[in-house]
Length: 440
Image 1: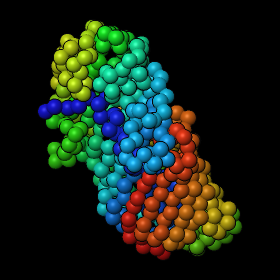
Image 2 (image 1 turned 90 degrees about the vertical axis):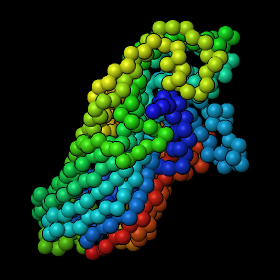
Image 3 (image 1 turned 30 degrees about the horizontal axis):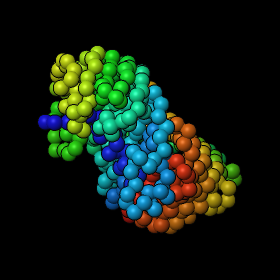
């Protein structure tokens, strides 16, 4: 089966991120977020403001690049003629990065077992994509089928990329570990059974060379390893042939009550003044047996005049390769989440949260989240919430957005306002969810 190389699909995925968004920016810390809160920190399942929560479907994707800068107003005013290669601002470097995280939460539910414990089932379909440390000029000339009039040199260290798609079903359990009049400590865990649909991956410890436009020749030195899991086609991801694995989320939440004197009074009737949370999500991996790995010797000078928009064909035709079959262990995008949530008045809150990748940048056979710090005021009531998150994201991007929860419907974006107002946005997002909340 034929597979496109990661360099080929990166441009398609970058375009895709303009239509979707990150994981529920602003909404996940709402005390009525239900299942979306459990995904962020499993301890939020217990002692929530809901008797039960039934997620029908919700979708979130977060993507972007430190190579492209997009002006959304130019796209809107272009009447469909906007060309990403020609009309976007470029931030080319020797180590550009592309990223995309997609998350669809399928039918899921949670409910209270007792006053101090809750349980839930969370089902999701997910896909993550990363390319790290690729030379921007090299990426551009490949994306443009080597139609360039400029000579350039490149020297990419630890070039790597991974596409990984999988489904998961998680059993979430939370319990109040300590309860005193002014203090509550909660803990939670989600045990996840993973079903991997497959992966495409590449790596090169050092890729250097130069391109000469007048002669249309590409000179390279180094080795490129390119592999796919068995029967995986990234053009048509098939969830019928799956590989098993296991994962884990774990989290804790501390809540401080300024004047709570009676611990028999339900906390949702006597809200906290301060909440502090910490969680680690996506601990685990999926092992794909019989993966095919091609190791290309790139020490050569080749002519690019006949390049036909397929990197893998180009590699096979011009470079010596050694093919091996072996197991490939694809790690989940493990992340650390920190939260401080302060109640200003009965209905107004302000929060600060950090989402930090625990996967070392450049790690092979891994995907990762984008490091992000977010400040967000919110108005929160039983039937309605409004969020206005301001995020400081990796690669120097600042994003400002908004979102609402109106009963069963949630919609928002952590970057909608900067996407509309900025001349050069590097990330973008929007999320949408429909559920059946059962309030206390």
